[in-house]
Length: 314
Picture (cartoon, rainbow, N blue to C red):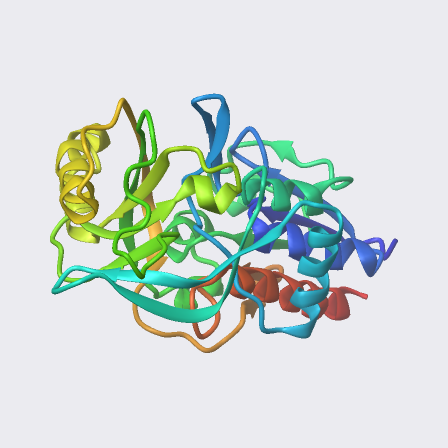
């Protein structure tokens, strides 16, 4: 060990990836999170006797280092290729929208973070300010607005200038699958929704998980979410009505709503992380650091910050 101690606040993918790099470099590292389990916004919840992805919908791969991690997950049955084609819904007829291969996880995307966190001994703790932490350096693996609440007058506050939009994840279960296919030529795995005031994305959670359960997860527009942050369940009728109209399906048997106050960042930021000196170094990482807010971006941000901080401390 280097004799220097780091506390990583946040056990999402970025925080776990950062902690692994620090540990690999011999730095004494503790991970704390306010949640019961690791995962962050790659969250899944057990609903209707199965895990349902309520946060990130999928992951894509382009970086060789991340590809090696995903290949290892696939070899152990933790991740699988889902689809390279989504549907475009909204104006006009449903249409196919090809793209990169999207990956899912049989046990939910959270299981992938749990796998990487194995051995880290994540501690459950609510942190209210940096001065509560006894460490030579601190990593904040979280959206800018959450990090701003903790940093006080530390110079890192100057770079935490990115705003985030809210989203509500509305999961719904039907008695049977009646939406597939949405047209004679279009298989349905998920849909980008254009021009709808209430829903921006719909995922077929049964296809994503691989068990064909009659479960859909819709992500609301930021506008609908903003109106219902204090009453998330109040957004369910509008979101469900949009899904029923877009996919021509009946009323679901059950609905669950999850609130994401800070779901995705606005604007652009090319820097992969922040690492700022003050009374002690404070780093910030996550999918808000990098060209696009993706699962891979979060992993890369955590890895790169972990290596940079390890080099500084050792």
